[in-house]
Amino acid sequence: MAIAKYQYMGAKALIQLHKKHLKLFYKTWLIAKSKSITLPKTSDPEYKSLDRLLFHVLRSAGRYMIWICAKLELPDPGITVPPPVNKIEKEAEKYMNHVLAKWENQLADVKEELFHEPTYLSNWGVHYCIDSMLEHAVMHSIRHQHQLAKLNKEQR
Image (tube, rainbow, N blue to C red; front, side):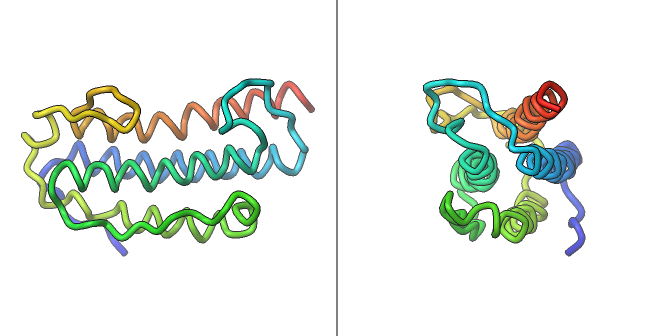
C-alpha cells in the first residue's frame, strides 16, 4: 500500500522514518540473536532477554499509533496485540509488517496544527504533542538498534 498524500508532510516524514528504523532495529536484532548476544543486567523486565526486547519494541510501535489515534479521536487503527514472547521470534516479521501497514495512512487527513497542540499525557506520565510522540516512536527504535549494534560489536 502506498502512503497517501498528507496534509502535514512532517507526519509523513516521521512515518517513513519510523518504518526505516523499525526495520533496521529488527535486522540488528537478528544479528544479535544469531550471535547469542547477552543484554546488560538490569531490573527492567523489558531487558530479560533478546526475545523480550523484540516484543517490547514491536508492541510499543503498535501502541504509539493506537495512542495517537485515540488522542486525535480517530478510528481505532486495528493494530493487533503482538505474538507472545515465546512466539515473537518466529512471528516478528509478519507482525512488524502488520504494524507498519497500519501506520501508513492513519494520519493523512489530520491538519498540521493538531500535531502541535494540545499536549496529552502519555501512558508513562509525560506530556507529548502528537508530533513529539511520532518523534519518540522513531527514536525508540533507533535507541534500541543503537544499543544492540554496540553489543554486537563488543561481543564479537
